[in-house]
Length: 319
Length: 262
Image 1 (tube, rainbow over the protein chains, first blue to last red):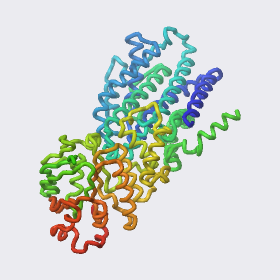
Image 2 (image 1 turned 90 degrees about the vertical axis):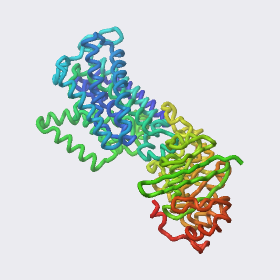
Image 3 (image 1 turned 90 degrees about the horizontal axis):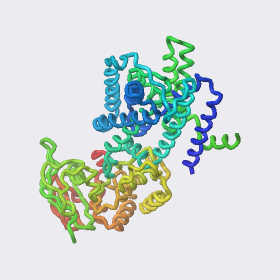
Image 4 (image 1 turned 180 degrees about the horizontal axis):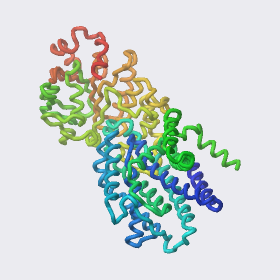
């Protein structure tokens, strides 16, 4: 019953966010698109967090997704949104299949540091690649939608609509996932790997698969970010970007699939206003917020809602 | 009767310490065997070797005439041997029911499914029935970290038994349980195991528990088997009386041994 409710809420959320497109100012639409895209990356990270693993290197796939979209448009002339997204996903799958073989053997700080190291390797390669614009990165060719090229002014809106749809689909999948045997297998691994072994299951295999899923979701987030920003640079793979994802994950908590997206939205808002308020020390404001969260809401902002689903349903019923 | 488990010359040494030396034993289908021995006698080492937690230094293990020496724990589990632990190995932050559901999905290989929920009416029903069989159905929604020791031990065994193993190895099922509750716990476990038809081997320090449930006893001393036979015979063995039981058969062994072995 619970899952039906979440499904309805998801569909409602997608439709409402689509409706907002009619009267949203451009800056808010851009901010929401970026927040949703980053929220997807964080959702993948939450998947790993529930397994007891912290990745400080989701920037690797975020950046990879973005660069694949960029390269496909600028060098191969492929601008179709569906096609470039597919390329980004395949590329992330390929890389994560390889790196996962090593990473699934590590836990805790070792896992965190290794993921970060791989992400920094990509950063290093991109910074040295003059053809890809070194530290400046390069611009993304305007996207087309299934053979149709929307006019430049409306492109942002189209990407926004697309991002909302993709976020909805990924959220739905993740919602099913968290309640599935595979989702619980992650919690089992976090709690007791020895027991998992004695239940006839390889924890490494489960971690490996989870790492692939997290990578794919991160690449989707990166691709959408690149499409909406129209630009990619190596900063996307820098460790501070990965740290940002961890920050957002802590901000939202792991209590609900929608928490990372809500947190990402809040994060982008805080950052925008913090930057306005204190152009040189805005990171301090972010740091203070994180400290407050850790001290007072160790389970994230989502823990502020005591009965989130019940409350929401009532609200929906009245409105 | 057919032999289900056989070990030949099984040995394990840690550096200069020999934890198990030349263990030869066989176990018949459906048998209930008690294992006794003082601390460090090699009982847990033996179970750890059979279940793949430790690789034997030498010797071989055959399960249903199949060589399983050096198998990983998960291959041993899939072959049909399950175990419980001296310190119950559970998922403490989850509920009793969730522990059972996870165990069931892993043991039947559906743990990689993503599109159907873990908590389906059919699977919940099955898990609750299994919990009832061990008399812990009323703890279904309790978080495992809050459970009393005896209930945890039962849950540990109930989870292991979900796979329908042919052999169950119990490493001190009554550890951490008050003396007056030991028999109740063992009754529950032995009834359930008996109904499933699995052979079982259990480690126990309490000789009264041993003589009540085991049909055969294997006594370990310093890594060797010093006696192996029908319960009364083995408990009457002179070396067993001297090294393991002491002369006072019907008294509880000294307290504190659980802490020492944990």
